[in-house]
Every structure is written in structure tokens, then in C-alpha cells.
Length: 300
Image 1: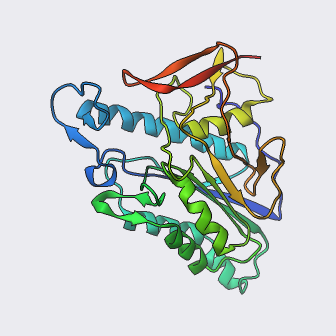
Image 2: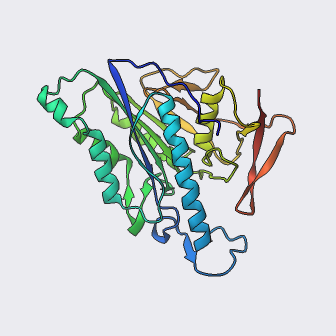
Image 3: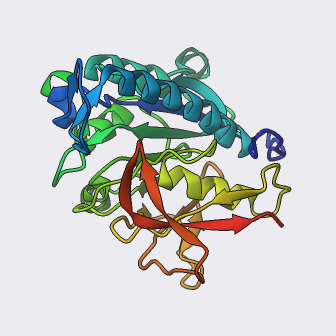
């Protein structure tokens, strides 16, 4: 796999980076309006899934999360916990995981009167359902986590202003949080949304690279100057999905459209998509053609 061999950043004794990788419900009816059917074909109806589909997607998500673990380790992060996407996802369990994540070094901080030596960057990666219009994270039993709730958990953890929070919301309608985050003025906050507030985020089955289009772009950025172990790797130009980021502690490069945020990742905005020559094909998801061009990048 192309992400198997990698070089990590050199360690900086004054900084540390930890990551929490969270999945959400993929088929729960209450979370995403998707039902599971016991028998029969889906007949191109993407709102219906068989048990066989569920087993396959759970396997693929677990595979993707192993790849994501490698991605974050590549930028020098320590994985605090990795919870792949599951059929049922509890909001309460997720809150407990996030609180434990934000306070993993509480004993150390209390012993030193909160005057600890290392500034810490906390990366939260979320993939799952996003609620239309709000981008809120969806769970089973019709539960939602709002932008305000997540920031309140961060505030409750009483992190110092030197610490940073980096959020990647790899879900539909995730751009809706950006307006709210701008008003909260949280120090050292960076937020990457997979799409705008009125757009859906795509997941496709494409060989052994991450199926998430957002995370695929992160991988390509890191693989840019490294040797590919595959004949080629795929990127995308999806006309209906435009990633967007917010970060108030660094200036965006007008020419490149990205910034390097705390945590070592390039956050980016895609305003327009372009087709490069004729070297593309339509994505095929579980036998269904989806509209969008996936560009093939030949090995260097």
C-alpha cells in the first residue's frame, strides 16, 4: 500500500500532537434515513442496503481507519484512540471518548499546577452522517452533536491557550459549522470541512486507497514527493463537493489555496474543479455509477 512506508516529522520536545479518530453510524435508520433490507436486490436504490452490504462496508471502514492511522502518524501524531465507523454509534460514548481525549494528561497538569512543559495539538477526525443545513454529527436514536457542544467540551477541559484544536469533519453539510466557529474565537482552532453547508460528502470504493475523497486528498499531499508503491493513485474532481477550511491563526496562500495547520496537515479549500485531459473515469460505487470525475495520476 502506498502509505505503508513513510517518514515522520522530527520530534520537537516542546510540542506534541495526539489524534482521536471517530466513525459514526453508516446504516442506522434514525441517523441517516437508510434502512437495512434482509433480502432482495437494491435495484439502484441507494437508500436500501442488504446485510451483505453492511458487512462489506464495515470491513472497508476498518481498512480505511488503519490507513488513516498511518496518515496521522506520518505527520508525527500519536493515536489516542481509533473507533471505526459502526452500525450503531452512541452520542454518549462519543462524548466520553472526546472528554477522555481532551483530558488525557490531567494528572500531569494538576501535579504541575497546569504549568506543564509541552504545548499539545489535539486532532479530532470525524466521519459519519452530517445533518442537513447544520452539519451536526448524527448518531443513532436521532441524537446529534452540535458545533457548540463540541467546543463546550474543549472549554470544559480547561486547556491552556498554547494548546491547539484541529478538527476534520469528513461528513455531509460540514461547512455549516464554519460560520459558528468564526464567532466563537477559540484560540488555535483549525477546522476542515469536507464540503459546503449545502453539499454532500462522497465515499467511493476505489482499490486500496482511502474511500473518503477528503482524506484521499490529504494522502496525495503527503505522497507528493515520495515513491509510490502502486502503479498509480487516484485523486478527484467532484463537481458537487467543495472542501472548505477555517483557520484564524495563519494566512491563506492565495495561490495555493491551503495552509499548514497545527498538527502538520495542509487544510485546503477547493473553489472549482477542473478536468485534466481525458484521463478520467466515472466512479462506480457498489455497482452504481455516480456522477463525478476521478483523475488517474500515473506513478512518477
